[in-house]
Length: 185
Image 1 (cartoon, rainbow, N blue to C red):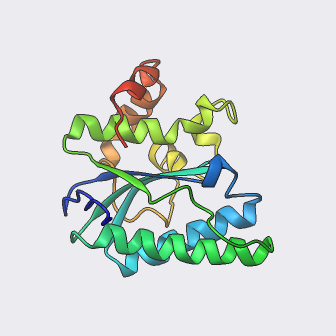
Image 2 (image 1 turned 30 degrees about the vertical axis):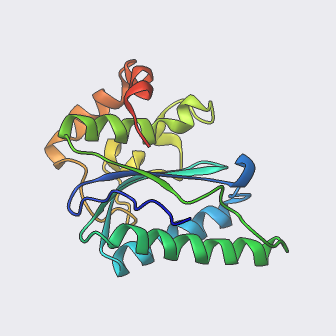
């Protein structure tokens, strides 16, 4: 049976989620997270997919990606997924699937929804009680978006620099919890 074609809209952001197989951890240590980010940077540039936001959790990844062409998203994810799986299988002396299935993605078609998705992505470690503030988590784009710290994984702005304070206030609103019902992936 053929796979159903994935809906992709070039030039629009996409919320992408990929989970570890059986919800097992895919990132065991900081070296793993750094390797994944390195691959993310490499393949996003090679495949012309812009990264607006990201967060690496222990057993899954959230990305906000804007593909330039319809093929950009899947080619980027294919490269990252394949190379990271080979790396993890070699490092941990394992075989087989690392990821649960193909990544899930949803088109982000409105600017108001864009900030809600970014907030959902960047506050994931707060909801998981890993940190108190989103910008305290080292493996997400929150520090760049909230405090303006350069992050070379990001290759497109989420908002203008003049909007940073507005976004910082937005990300800290308590309504971030109600966004969970709105977020599709």
